Image 1 (spheres, rainbow, N blue to C red):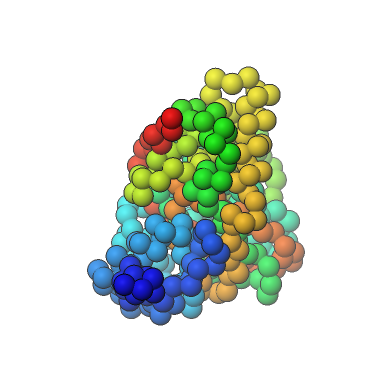
Image 2 (tube, rainbow, N blue to C red):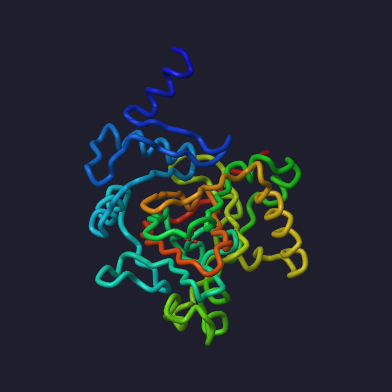
Amino acid sequence: MTPSTATEMRYAGIDLHPLSDHVGAEIRGVDIAGGIDETLFTSLRRALADFGVVFFREQKLTPEQHLAFARRWGRINVNRFFQPVDGYPQIAEVRKTPDQAKNVGADWHTDHSYDKVPAMGSILYARETPTSGGDTLFASMYTAYESLPAALQRRIAGLRAVHSSRHVFGPAAVRGDEFAGRIGNATLAVQDATHPLVIRHPDSGRSALYVNPDFTVAVEGLPAQQSNALLQELYASAARPEHTCRFEWKRHSIAIWDNRATWHRALNDYPGELRLMHRITLEGVPLEAAAQRS
Ligand code: SIN
């Protein structure tokens, strides 16, 4: 079988265009609102597993169709902090208006890592995009782990890290600033969770780095200085450009990403313009440590 035949069989019914060597693929020829049969959906699942994030363009979706697409992937997890879309408590609004300076999700992160059972994935739909800018970057956490020197892989094996929502969504973080009306329920930001630094991905079984600059606050059991130094070393390596892809949104683009296999960050380079996205988050499962290498 030629490699292209194998690829065609693995992704039957979809036209797949990788955005980089390790993460991200655009899928063409799929009409989400028109319905996705089981064969097509199997191919989409495989593409998400292989690329960590997949993108579709020109999908004109109502909120109900966005929700129906999300339900194909799993149960919906309702975000506590984002302003919901009017009439749709399960859809979070990611909005930046022309008068606002800060955007949401500007630093590298993985959604909901502060939860004891972190979200499996997120589905982001572009309702309004700026004339230019507002791209989202994604990084592969498989590559982030696999590219670490063996000695560093051994050093982090078996370690756990603490993740928190307090410093991002809590009263001290969002008090009186321009996130009012976009981020709320600050008093609910009391989640702390610990997860392995290196997880065994629940679906693929691959090892993935599971710490992120936004929500990870410490490596358990290490003095603060050592913990910070280790996290910074891991972050610098994970964010190397060769581990990333960049997606340029157009109105009606939609992405689904796996939060256990990727990081993402939204660029804030469109002053004075509106960017309005609708996000649905999907329930995940508890995360287990990857098997330790000898
Ligand atoms: C997010 O961080 O979930 C939103 C990303 C984006 O707005 O591009």
